[in-house]
Length: 392
View (cartoon, helix red, strand yellow):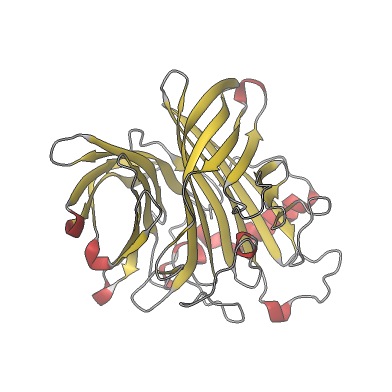
């Protein structure tokens, strides 16, 4: 969910872009988000769509693919990397799907001009003061996607997610292994000295993680939520292009899979979302949704993940997230330094962005960037991760 620069627009992409801009006209950078429908309309009523619910059975590899009867979905990768000189680099690759009509209002079978699904892809590369962002759009229908026929889509066997030549593909061949255990991810934008992008190989060193209650992640006190699964155990190797120059890189990555039809409650204005790789091998996902908590407060949740992949849900009273420092970014005051506490685990951490200028000027804009984690008491390094902040 997100404005510029946009990849080269062909006819179908331009049509999708105009449709998406019309849908999100009230959520562009120049206008504040409408609190009556939550950030970017994600709290709007979703009558006729399938609803995320507790006790939803998950099946893999099928659930790595699209869920077109749900309104919203994404395949969302972030990575904390270093180049050969030890300079930190960060990147993102994301494919979003948004259904335009509920199942009962679609053509059956779809005609040649059917477009009941919109696709949007984001990619970003960051190093020091450089932060480059690109965005692309496509449209499609609810049939099983085909790389030969469709500009964008996701297939299950073999797993492949794409929009044009921005791709995420499984390299798993042996039976008995999850399709997301080994991936190749590719994206490139710009030309010459303005080129940026990457080609990376990802190998999972742990299992898939189901957030919340067996994959149902509650997002508000009234029970709103999504189906949310992650693969947070990737080791990464490959090449990043930035300012037209290649860099050999290695590091860690985190893939989020999430689908819902009404992600937020109508009074939730946005979120602050953390995915952290701790130095002792633990992982932590934590979020604060602004609004939707008890007595009108914020709603907090998260997942504590052991090095072996065992996941423990964090209830709102298990977690404290406190903004400590704000910086002006893109005309907004953004909290780029946080105190994160897990009192029952004796953790008191500072999570801070070394570079504040990580604004994503996409169709619906947001902040996203790499963060460092230190111990609040002695300042010792405790890990790295990513932070996403929306609705500011």
